[in-house]
Length: 260
Image 1 (tube, rainbow, N blue to C red):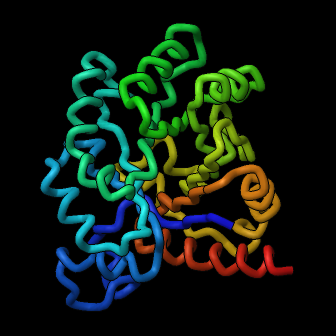
Image 2: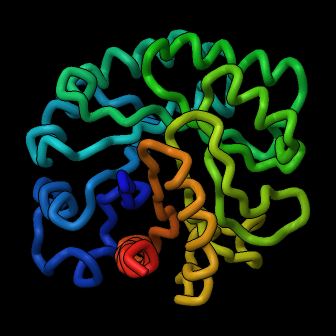
Image 3: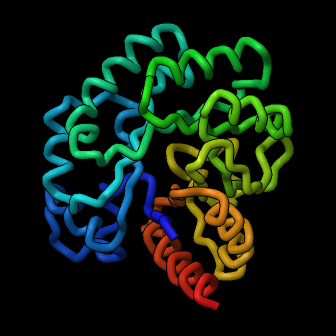
């Protein structure tokens, strides 16, 4: 079983004394995190693309078998006017991860306004082509993508699909166990219906999963594991340290489920 569970980002002040020990320095957070988890999503690259030196430092703080998933810049997912240059800049920056075989892939999280149509499908192909051999994983918010034809399209074009857990609201993607490449991917965003559309900052992700809610995913995760050579699960409900807590609980649940 090659399953890696982690969180979306790791450097949050409100994780102090919840996940991180009191007084830990920012520079030591990733090293501490890597003792608990085997992978992490780098979200800062959505806002600004770090230089190669930043990724070089990250690799020095984690074990050799640690994986990074890097989120593509908003230019590529939300603005979409100069995406090729942005992607090339990001690929150059992550070379330290590539050289150490620690880059699991790139995550492209598209907005709700990104609909399923021919132009956007072609855009996905062009994005994949820009990344060349780097695995691309796409996350949709609009349920117009929730069709078997989309699953086939992604499979044919070797584009990974991100299954999501998010609020049960009209227009959003529901819970799935799709696998469109040989790598599985799931992201838990929380189920904060009240703040999803109108919440400020990270309020939409403020949510603490119950054990029953996590338990309900075990069959889907098991199915994905059976069909993939590697799978990722990330928790993006980072406010108040809920993400690492829920990630730890789900890890234990999966271990017990697989063993039984």
